[in-house]
Image 1 (spheres, rainbow, N blue to C red):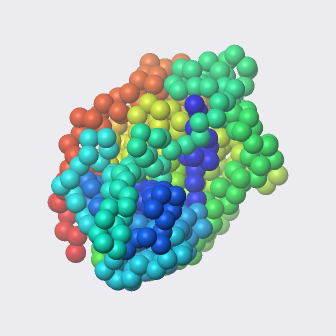
Image 2: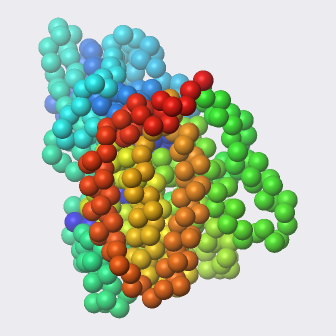
Image 3: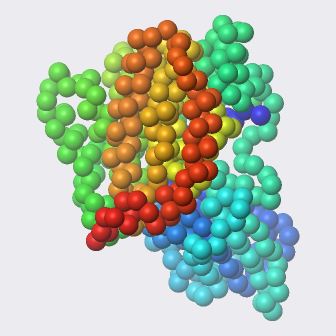
Length: 446
């Protein structure tokens, strides 16, 4: 099955789709299973173990608060970010929003040394009754982009679509067969699942959430939470660019400003859209924001729909062919895939053929291969915020190179995605979201 754009772009909260959005969803899944089996009223104690990468950087990524919020029934799409930030085990939870478990009844253990073979982001839940008897035990995997897998089940839609594809080769074949663009392939698939007006409305809502995160980032000053005292720089860039007059209106400097605005919001635990993850959430919005500066306002809505659908089509290839999880393949899977998505989408926006779109996406990932995930203090701040800014500029550069050509090139996107997957498998675990290698250990965190 081909994933939906709404699987790949989902509204949530920072600072991490794997460590915040996914665990919140996993908690809701556990509560739903518990309600259907033993019943919530029978629960006297809950124990949650955060394994591997979740245990290593869970505190810096806000995972315990997200777990607790999910146990109370909150959703990433609608939860108040301030509520999640304030959640601690000491406060207990209102299980499923119905039954109180008081202080000490919920225990969350960080277990970075325990790694399961299926995926490094694992959560183990167990619920016990008043006599200590085990009521339910489940293991979930937060596999990147907010996706959660449970007991062999994969998150996402399993509905058939008319234009199925798993690889770039197959995607371009669909385009040739029907004489259509990549965004049109995704549009036809989406419209086979729901009404066209709903697809358009919800894609515009995704962009509204993205653009709101940019605007909040432009206007919110101060230091980010977490102890590094990282200063927000997007408001300074915004002020400087805005003061330069009309000649700066379409400057590529806006790419860096917009990307940093989103990722500073993400680092603060604010509301952002996974694209395809939170750690890389600034790249696609920044490039779309910049592209719209070059279009007439009457063209904006159509351009947004096409851009997001094209970007989602490219994201499908990464989800199917490799991974978008930093804990699994390093930051090449997050920033690298987002750079490819943005490069391809902006190429189609400015008239590129499907072959040129594929070429731009390939350039975008090829020049992010080997990128490690080594956040200082486990916070999605350094190097993550600047990394999004650089990748947004790189995406536009990749697009320009592709648009100068005719789509013919030596390295195909499928080859680059396979290389990313193999590179991720070969990469040492200390460079994959554990904060035990790279910048995380060579730069003081205070």
